[in-house]
Amino acid sequence: MMSQLDLAALQVSLLGEGKLRLKGNCHCHSTYSDGTKTPADTVDLYRNAGYDFLYLTEHCDKLTYDKFPDFNELDCEEIRVMPGVEYRNTTSRNDKSEMAMILGLNTLKLSHWKPGLDQQSTINAINDDGGMAILSCTYWDGRTANDMINLRGVAGIEIYNATCEGACSKGIAVMHWDELLESGMRLWGIALDDAHLTDWWPDFALGWIVVLADSKSPDAIKNAIRNGNFYSSCGPTIEHWTRQGTTVTFQCSPAKTISWNSIGPYGGVFRGKDGETLTQATLDLSELQEGLPFVRFSCCDEQGRWAWTNPIWL
Image (cartoon, rainbow, N blue to C red; front, side, top):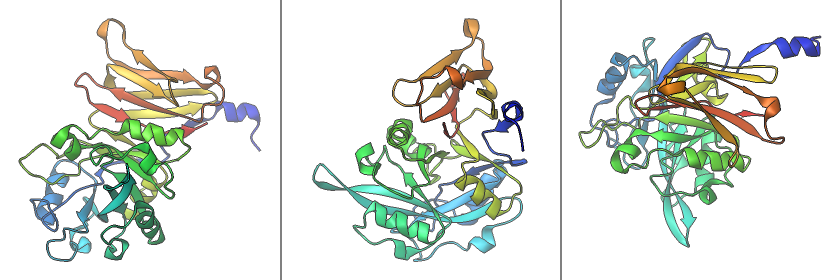
């Protein structure tokens, strides 16, 4: 049995223990719903951009051919192509029925959806099918924390959506994420494209996750996402995020700021001297306000692009 001294000396990776770092996009559309490229052309674009995996997540209510693409035909060793569905649900806000999008990863069931279905019913169906339910487009479709705070079985929330950002500057939902975390919900933050590959606004290779996995198999990627063994980015690379005793160390590509955040006003920003960039910051958990439930890190590069860790619960 390890002694307390041994445990204090042990360095633990907070990003996960996987040996491979795999870059992927979890939200994308093709001509099988309202995207402009065929599934094969869409996969080629991401493969040529250096992606290791891609979720094709067609709108269930906009299927062009009343069916989904053939994922067995699209999937290959070079880029793993995995199934998902975007469901259009409803929530009640200000005594009116409003739209609420739910992304189902690792599921292809149309039976999960019908017009007017509420969020929780779809989340339950996704989980019953072995999938992961992701709160999608939350800032864009006008949801507030009250629309989501009582939901159960949610795996994650889109904290950056390139299409929503390009369409009307409503693609960054970090505040929604923090509100849900403060309420006690434990869910991961995911950056992604929601690519339709149109000429209306940029939506390709602008938001992604990097998972730490032991292999490039679909199962290994799914498990890494489910367990939160990934970080999200719009540009910066997170090299390491580790804990040794009460010390948390964060390392990244050159950034103008590195931040840590918890509930409410609790957090801090590290800045380089005289405008120099940073690549590392450390935080002593023993010096924090007692009772903080979680800590997460983020960084911003000189181009204003962000990267985010998932939270660790204290």
